[in-house]
Length: 189
Image (tube, rainbow, N blue to C red; front, side):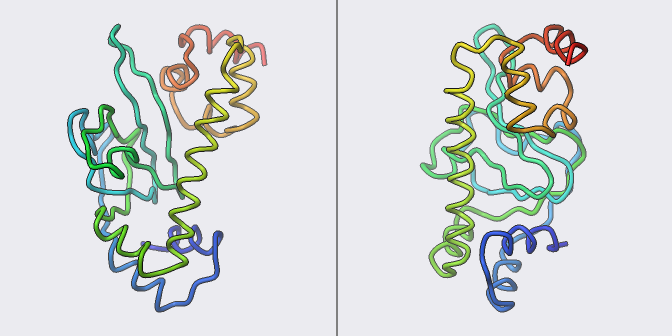
């Protein structure tokens, strides 16, 4: 149950077995269905999730009723409504599974307890924050002024598996283009 999480942690830092076991005691398994809501729009996020199988997406709905996807987390990655988890205010976005998933979940309290007690876990948290920041920055600055074709090329370069793991509708939402435009571009590449 914890093999993937263990690999993830060990890819970031050296850690002893006692610390790993303490970390594992704080996580519980959550098996979900497809499109299951983990955090609702006006809800305060209380948990962090590690994806053992499947995936999650974080998105908002714009004034036209369209999904605007901000982030995906797939197998072997952490994902949550991080701003809400940190400041304990309503998420103003949704966190939902993409497909049937197996998640390891940890409460905010337990997560921060581990960050405070285990220096190696603090490095894990730092990696989560850094990755989120880097992806957000690359997306924001990379997409400014990009044509639809350039956006698709950018995503294939920086997040190559994304187009293989999600539907065209979700990928198009993430890229800020229409699904038909994405389909047209994919056939040309």
